[in-house]
Amino acid sequence: MEVDLLSDVKRRGLISQISSPETLEKLLKEKQTIYMGIDPTAHALHVGHLLPAMCLMHFHIRGHTVHPVIGGATGLVGDPSGRTKARDTDSLADDRIEQNAQKLTASMDLFFRKGIQYAERRWNHEGESIQAPEILNNLAWTKDVSLLEFLRTVGVHARMNTMLGRESVKLRLSSEEGMSFTEFTYQLLQGYDFYKLFTDRGCRIQIGGSDQWGNILAGQDLISRLAGPEQEVVCLTTPLFTTSSGEKFGKSSGNAVWLDGTLTSPFDFYQFFARTTDEDAPKLLKMLTLLPMDKIEATLEEHKAAPERRVAQYLLADELTDLVHGVDGVRQAQAATKALFAKDYTGIKAEDVIDALRGDPRLVCCLESELFDKPLLRLAHEHHLVPSMSAARNLVSSRGFYMNNRRVEDTGFMLQRSDLLDGRLAIVRAGKGNHLILALSDA
Image (cartoon, rainbow, N blue to C red):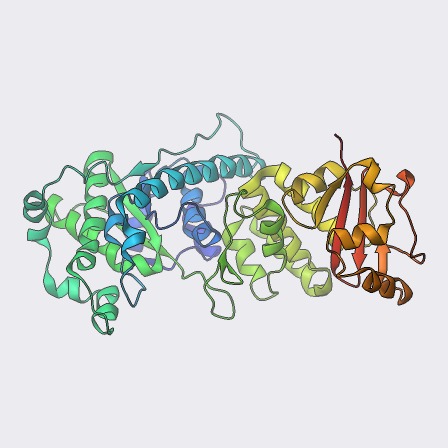
């Protein structure tokens, strides 16, 4: 890649802390092995995982060996970082953690496979295709270690004053609930991961969120004590991922926005980023996309000139939907967005709209006998666009009932085949923002 890795990730705002900037610069003169840990507290990735995952992606597409490490072992203990109380026991159950670890491994693999395709399109990659990274599970090297062996190998080198000084520990010790010994040892388990990856795979760099700083340093310290202080390893963290209002990024009305299309549809994923504030859009374009910085800066200048057009937000939504769901996901999300929010339906593709909104209650597939034999107001009532027939008639009389952006003025109006967009769609709107999309079934 022409752009220097370290300069690029710094300019994009992907780096918060580096344990030794000089050592990192020295190490990156050669290809390195880097890892990032993620505990299986959920069964899929969500947008809150994007920031550290994209940082790891930057190393991967430039030829470094990266390993996402699923915490099949650490997940059974529970990371206390940033928490005022312990996780409930159900969330730490063996079978739940095991199932989550399997699903999270598949989710991470898909993210990198889609992300590599996205990277190759954006960076005009030539030569051999970039391969997906090997995803590891720390249960593999932890499950057979006895308590005595762990204490004699790791515990003997741990210093209580250092462990008690970690922010995650101090926060919990000052809370009403306090901290269990199990949680207290979490930093030793994560430190052991770094040591094992250093000895077995030559890993010298660990990436994590800023709340992981103490845990990551524990690994660097353990390597220094077991392998010698001359060993060059580096810890780096990504910034705390929050919105301009200070809220944790990745929540939508209290619910996670998932990268799994079966949990959050490509259309809803697209809309989440299309609704980004003007304050957040610039940093997200830099942090989460692989667009060249000059392209981003040009877009931001265009956005400043006409913020009502939301060019920055739509570019962000396009790019991240491409990253996570591929070009098909972008096409479908754009089609659904056009169907629900645009004033001009020229060129709309029925198949893309149907695919994007499949499972959405606003989309209803109808047989010919229903679509063409019932008045449109009756269809609107039966499919819950309006609460009653009288409400539908009131909307018509108040000039607030539309079909394909054309005002409906006849309460007895019935659809004809010639009314359908792309031969299949009738987009019905009640008022300003309530929609029903009637699709002619191909059955």
